[in-house]
Length: 176
Image (cartoon, rainbow, N blue to C red):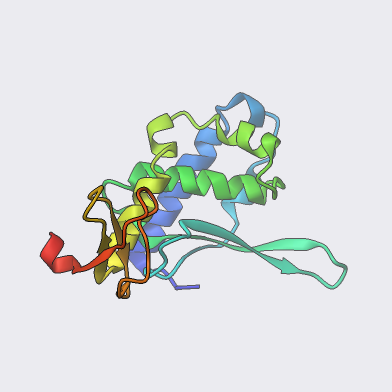
């Protein structure tokens, strides 16, 4: 876990307060005790993370039960244009804390109650932005013009997912 600085800790607490107060207004959570969400430790993922946007980490106790260790969010979720998506990610992780550990139909039904639909759909764009930020190379398809951000060269070993042509390497700075 990355320890948040003072400003990041303040933003995490503001985000927590906003999500917990919004949970109280949603029909499925009116009778749910959300008090434990106010004391769950919050932390940050490494800024180099590209796949994970948030994570709930658990401790297995001696009796075999699980206890929440920390909920971590990607630090870029505090920046524009990702702030609204950051609230959704924290909501998602809080669903895990409340006992909905599996990403099953019940979990997805609860998750779909998040009022900001556009924020809930920003996951793919966030992943793409994180990948592009870390990439040194674009694997570029000359046929369909698709590009795939990567940290290493393809050296002509990979095909395009769409049209099966060999991908070409381009440095990221040349593509921008």
